[in-house]
Length: 216
Image 1 (spheres, one colour):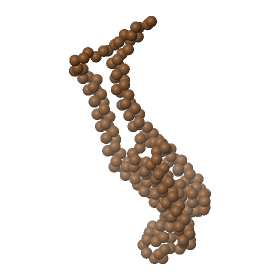
Image 2 (cartoon, rainbow, N blue to C red):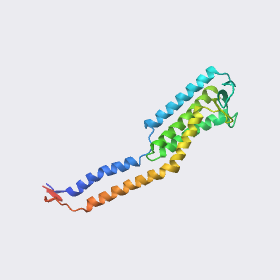
Image 3 (cartoon, rainbow, N blue to C red):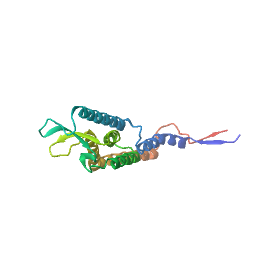
Image 4 (spheres, helix red, strand yellow):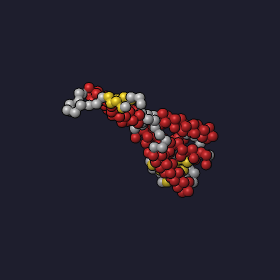
């Protein structure tokens, strides 16, 4: 029977380093579509958007406002353009553009490495807003707007969701990403230093450590 040599020391070190490798792999993983946070935000936005639009359609005629005067009003308006009534009369083209935008947004989200919860929340808002308006374009041929504030163009919940989502993304990339990168760098340096000390520290125990064991 052949002699087999088992390196106990190397085996132990490999087992100790395994959790670290798993942790690093998890930290660098891509964003997943199975993550519940973006889905919860998306579905909440779509539901709230469609319910408010249905109430406006059932309550106000097109062009009617409630109250009739004031800085803030609910005004039933049809929008065949983009958000905030831009590019009117381009409904069919904008439907395809919106679908393409959702696909691009999904690709960008999937390419992110372990995204911060704020980014996942922001993407959920943008997905929900885009889908809410797409539902209107496909079902009605136009988008229902009703939030009328002063001189600002009439808009809806979906438009607001998109704008808030973009704003949160900008806040993250401008102010929070640097802090998150520094935290990850410090964590990585601390882990490397700890492993280095562990590898170079001599064994202080009185019991001799077996390095190689022969098995006949």
